[in-house]
Amino acid sequence: MIKAKAVRLHGKKDLRLDEFELPPHKDGEILARITTDSLCMSSYKAAEQGENHKRIPHDVSKNPVIIGHEFCGEITEVGAKWKDKFHPGQKFTVQPALNYRGSLDAPGYSYQFIGGDATYVIIPEEVMTQDCLLPYDGDAFFMGSLAEPMSCIIGAFHANYHIKPGSYSHSMDIVPSGRTAILAGTGPMGLGAIDYAIHRDRKPSLVLVTDIDQNRLRRAESLYPTQEAAKQGIKLVYVNTSSTKEPAAELMRTSDGKGFDDVFVFAPVKELIEQGDAILSRDGCLNFFAGPTNPAFSANFNFYNVHYQGTHIVGTSGGNTDDMREALDLMARGRINPAAMITHIGGLDSVVGTTLNLPKIPGGKKLIYTNISMELTAIADFGKKADASKLFAGLSEICSANNGLWCADAEKFLLSHAKSI
Image (cartoon, rainbow, N blue to C red; front, side, top):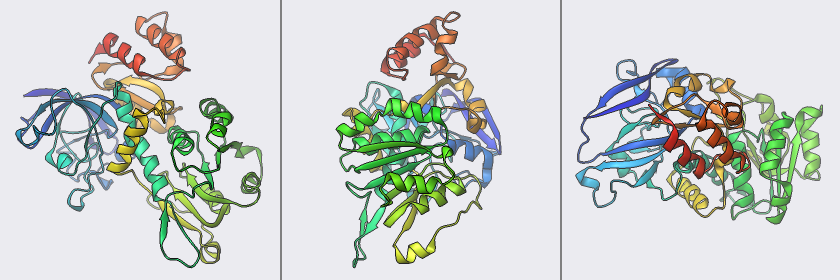
């Protein structure tokens, strides 16, 4: 038997770092070692709601589940049924939205023995049956972890739709050479959306990015300069909407009064949804990307425009397996670099406190290395700890030379120098 350590949910706001024995894996299962997990607000919401969450089992207090669904690792042992398809030493990531027999069950929410915040896991047969165990050939585990959040962004773009006058056929995805707005777009997922919008094949001609925090806007622009977008044939505009009393009118001016074909809302804020609605063009599609924690959350929507201007709204919660494959392909070819999402690094022993306080911790993605012990630390703060720690001194030097971003060299250094948990 394998002894594992994992952060498990036992009930509402009850996360614990547990040590336990994994049962022997069956012929249809796979034993794997997890290396990285990127923490997601969805795990915070699951912890807040406990057994009331749609993906959390009702008996979670008796049979706790491992949290974390943005993970990457290495296969250790393969059950007899899958030996022709997978092999020990193979890197992998998992599409958690299994859709197995119509169930909402997903790794990181619903299972006792698989989730991202663990040292070792048993991958159940349905993951392979649903073709959701995805081989990953990259040199850095953390990129594999970011394939899942990137797939959510990719799925959102693919889910938008438009209708030609006189037709009932939906044309899926954003309008090519159209006008796209990304509202509240300087958080980690918003940054991924900017990256994807300007580097994918189906490009808009205008990308508007808004926020109310000038520091976040500056960082976004430093990562994705307007000049870089211009090389892709895209006009990229950053707007701080806190500086105007009529933000919708200001945003309309950036589109020369034409409005936006595709609007993505990256924060669950009533006023932001209404702002997005107000800037839609004819046949414009608003995508509500950010999932709220309040089941009664609602906002006003202009139904006059729904009727006469053909505006519409969609919502997506996660991507599918094809979206993850697209993310892995784009990363492998260097088309996108989601490392910009990551602002903090930590070990498995930092997961409980970080997850329960995730909305209060500034910055972007919190990346966890599950087989080490390390307090959650902002990449920007590595230098402050350099004098007292050779680990942080080395990490600071590596990241400083990489425009302040996490990278494969930083991962290798961390894994060879950090304290094991």
